[in-house]
Amino acid sequence: MMTGFPKLTLVETKLLLRDPGSIFTLIVPLFILLVFSSTSSPGDTVLPTMTLTIAIGLVGLYMVPTTLATYRERGILRRLSTTPVRPVTMLTVQLVLQTAFAAVAAALLMGMALAFLGATAPARPAQFLLTFVLGVASVFSIGLVIAALAPSGRVANGVGVLLYFPLAFLGGLMQPKEMMPAVLARIGEFTPLGAFRQAVHDAWAGAAAQPLLICVMAGYALAVGAVAARLFRWE
Image 1 (cartoon, rainbow, N blue to C red):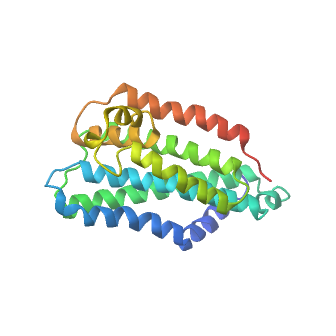
Image 2: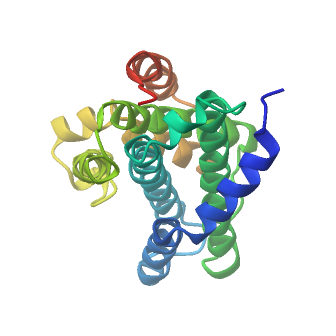
Image 3: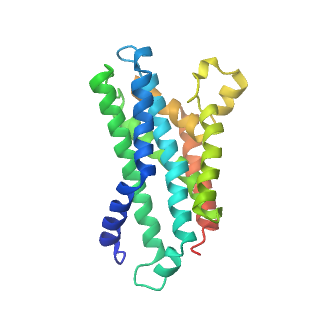
């Protein structure tokens, strides 16, 4: 068992809940869901899956890199290396907490959609859960690469935001995929947010999983995650 894991998890949970960025990440997708609810009909799965993808994108491309790069910038990881708590423990705690936070954000959005928008539960729950895990892993892998290369939390924040918008556009989060040029819609299927949005929509609506989308998410998680692990610096 990692030394100090429970105590570090408790401390980091308190810091996460006090972080204004975490409140922003929770509120923005809920706000979009409510504002555009008048355009959706009961049983619609498009709006809930779009806002769910927005939430995962904000956690993975904004919170994950900013938090880790800030800790490195302030020397927190370096100081941890001189204590029984190893830096890898901090990294593990952060990934567990951010994944749990993404799950909470998803649960809030689903609960809101079920309670107030007339949405139904995902028709394929096992496929939905697999998609969620792969989608989170693929988006987090990109956030970890940013965290590995950014010299400060401010730089990580800027890079994450700059990367988020083109990925959100290609992923069909700013306009329906059907309204996009065919070539851009096709490119979007090979982005982590685009693959996740379509795959989670399929699972929610009851359509069979598309192997291409599963492979795209798994590929990002494994390949980009390996790059992040190789590049990550504690100091």
